[in-house]
Image (cartoon, rainbow, N blue to C red):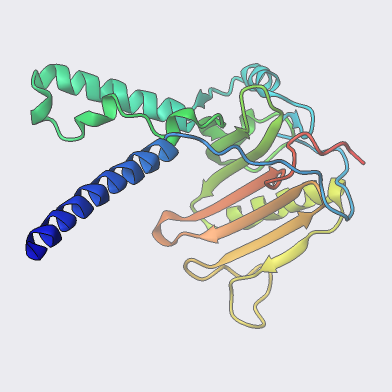
Length: 259
């Protein structure tokens, strides 16, 4: 009799445990389908950035429509490559794949068509402009190159949070000239930059080529804005130069006010 009660108790416990685990699993799936909106804050103490206009937009003011109009006026083609857009495109491709296969159980990953995740509701907008020649960018003259322009917004209605231009050069001299040109242009507005890394051996001159995968960077830090320029030796792929201006998270994107 005692053994029977133990067996029944173990069975009840197993059922309760399975139910509890089921609730936990469903809660995890539900949590994964929600986006936790960040709590934006005011800038901390410290010097505020002056008005910054970069790639035709003004930080703290310009919105998605403003940026799109500027890019169109420069004949720069851009596309929304936000997470929501990529997930929508993935689902559309999967639907086409399912239609061709005719049977959903023969297609790997078919559940993506109906299952939503937090990525589907991520409100961030990423406006990406690929293969853009530097000569098209009308904010200032840059050495000849080609690369990607990127703008990031917290939502469709928010002001710009991030803007960058990453481009490539085959040789070190062209990459160095581009890096120094960008640094001088930004220093004229923001003051002297802080050198973060040289990437070469001790005692190397600023004009010496970076070693493979070596990196040089210069930055400007304000309470409400971060600006940086980098040049990286990518080995056989040449050299990458990148300019970036952004309002660091979790500071409000509209915090910069030119003060």
